[in-house]
Image 1: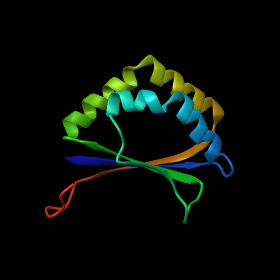
Image 2: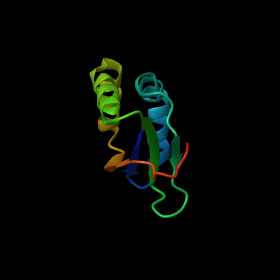
Image 3: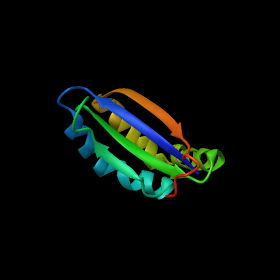
Image 4: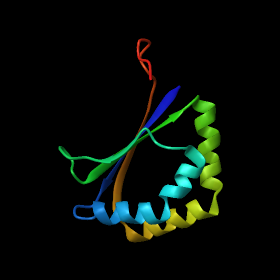
Length: 105
């Protein structure tokens, strides 16, 4: 099992607009391909212009296959175009995490 931890940083004052855009145009598409995230939330302390989502996959191959299907979806591509046009995002950081041997989810 692996976890895909993604952090996105928005231009100051635009995080709510971006989250609304995603909720209306991206959320259902992404869930259709990746399933439900472990977490999807806004940062309350630290960089308050950022949000995090964490997805779980059976393996790197599972992640690759699901993300390829997502990228091939015309609805997802339409959302990405809307997001790029809005210009709210300024940075993205991804980390792949593996559970510690003693962790049971």
